[in-house]
Image (spheres, helix red, strand yellow):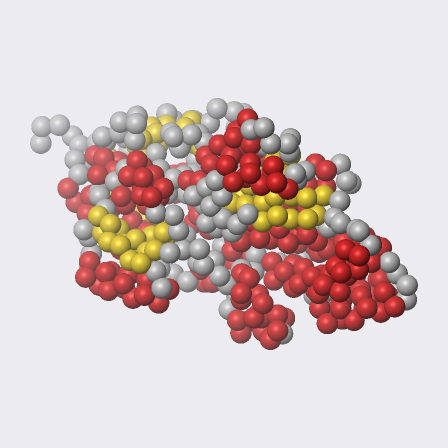
Length: 258
Length: 211
């Protein structure tokens, strides 16, 4: 071996398990991954960031050259994260950018296709029922109860009304986009997507994904344009502009989320 | 317990049949329709908002209370109209361009109506131009803008900018949605932010100077 490879700790959402595994197999680095459960964006900013921060804190800084986050801003769930090693995060609103390969591509698709519900290998095969997570905000607000539960609690008449009013969060969607990242059982995912879209009366489109952003993350190829490389000790913040994420500029004690 | 108190109880507990019957009873007893709204329905919904903020009740309870109030209003509206009584304040509300998630916006709308604010709901995916047009047409005191995704948050800033730069009558702007916080509201120059539909009532009343 001519030169030692860099060693990275990857902390990733399991929704991108196959994509990360495919990229890890060939990247020019030694990567030790930890996958966290999908759906953390649903438990609120504080809940999500504390889960990821625990994984960061459990990482031995002496072993790794950097800690990589396969996450987006994800409903602000990465705000406040900090590490004793460089912390690297793609500039992305959510995993759809990582699956499509660039935020520009996501922005263009998003603008051209309002009301689109996205699926990917991980979003299909790791699709857990949100009702299973009592910590999720929709569950805590009472938005996810089924008709039988509502009828038992509020009576038959109210159950219909409530189902109509709250059980309908998908009513404004018109299309399912299956992001084909080239991993896993593509034929099976396409069957699933086709029948899911048919049940809802939506159009289905197969959109080609890309591992480019994930490969760049794992290979140490981090252009400023596409990645935030946060120096040790600083914290991640949302930039509210096209950069999406940036180092925290304000007093870190400030808690403005509430 | 007076009929007005019983009516408030019926509304806050979401008993719409009782709400209707008690509304008719109160009118028969000579209570004016305006007093019915101000002294019974609005306080009942304010109590519901308070309990929601404190996590004592959840979205379903809030919605069935609002439904009970609507039942009472169905009886009252023709009489209010005949007496020339209209809500004192008007608000325009919608989700910003690109965002089609409307549950939060609908809840705020329900609770604002509960506070006897007339609400013009523009729906989802509303362009800044449509907001400006609605402000010209309805002359609201407040506009509510909602976004669920960080992806669509820039449209909040853009809509605030376009409204402020337009020749539409001046208006207070409130924003809300899962990823929003006060810091962001300040940054884009919104007048108010509320983290939930209960607080959105307090906030609109503060902005209206009605507390």
